[in-house]
Length: 91
Image (cartoon, rainbow, N blue to C red):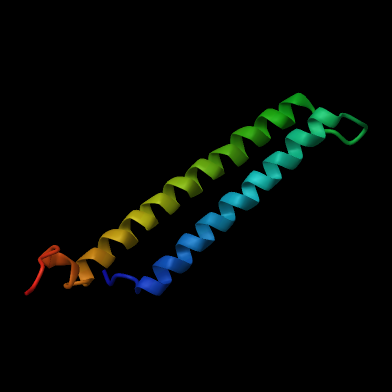
């Protein structure tokens, strides 16, 4: 299988971050609406399902983003031959 270019990896890392922020915003709004109360506030079962689904999505996107970040960092070290020699002073 062909590996993705570093630009595509960085783009997917940004997308994972944006998905995480979107899910966090949706969860924040749901919990805020429940705490505020009112006629259109979610009920407790809906709140719990929202926490389960949105929280699970946040965990999944965080893990996926971390794996992408780790893979991007390791591939950058492999592709940079100047770093592999260490820091030796030349006279």
